[in-house]
Image 1 (cartoon, rainbow, N blue to C red):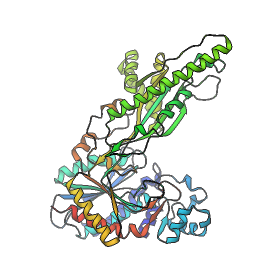
Image 2: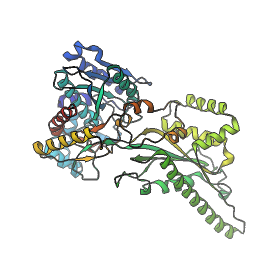
Image 3: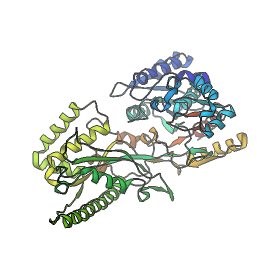
Image 4: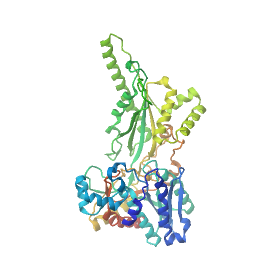
Length: 531
């Protein structure tokens, strides 16, 4: 299994790369050599998403016919390796990189040196997140093909989990089709994403009965342009964006909660002025975009809260402008001007544009922008659409416009599900009794995962606020909510012990991954197949 891990890591399947497109060939090759798939070739499929990337579906039936099915989920894409610095050439060579780190231990952080000294950690991009989990799933599928389980295993491995979840969103209709075609009883969607630390130095082990939600709220700040020599004749949008960011960044009022336990606070991912090139005209359009986690809160509740924070920022912008204008007026013997900043949603903005230009014309403009700038990523394209529409509604400025950019991950949870409770208890007892390892149940996996697109939603409220305020909705980005609702499969995540996801020190406790973890998953699958 370690050799398999090294072989898979060696393929540099960075999200969006050619290697990511090529990676399924390795899985297909491995599985097609199994006797089971030689006899049942139609149960092994390579399915293509809308952008040409593909996912792998492998269905292994139990020796005796049954509807009971466990879905094994994994992803094979990884993040890039720019953070590896001088070790980039070895980032995908697990054994070589690990040996390099042994030779240069004195240059490594203390926690890394301690793990190296233990002798059972391997390094490399994807070793932890999540090709080790994928290796375990392939091993479980091989066991199933030899009749080890009383139920069916459905293996699904997808691309693009680290970016926009194109693969998983393409897998959902396929899962529903299989369910209806064979009348399957999906007992659980079982993922093996690695355990995430809750705080620096956390060495606890976790099992997760849900997956955290994620949304990306953005605020387009439209000021008024002016010459730098007359700054009080306008309003600098960079000032507006900075005060909006100060209002949102790390604001614990915006932390969602699960039974009193907070999600991490929001943090900024993009903040910039949208002015192109240099001139002495002040910036009048800027944007700030955030990562924000969801647990129990609805989109409607969140939107109301974000609008309140944006309104608070607007009042602070006005006060800052007023105070400085008054001071300047006193020193120059002039009269001070004032600014009023309105706050609205993208949905309100687009209705303003439609009143002015007509609904058909606005739709044509959005389609033209998407076709012209299709090389942009979804965040950039979302910002561009809001920016361009705001320019057509410039008489409304100064204003702050709330919108949402892809990707969106619904929060899902299964901790109240009876079968999940029994399975977690079984796995915890096994871990404690056999391996002297305490597995702590967490209601939500905090690392964000594709389980969001198959699990039982933590909040079943309307998604109208999301659809109406997401510029790319049905313009290249959508989520199959109807199919997700029809599936609503209980979810569970138990994965390897690792450290430093998405960092150059990403590493895997290989002894746990290919020993206790595999045995615990086997035990859990047997429990899930009980009536």
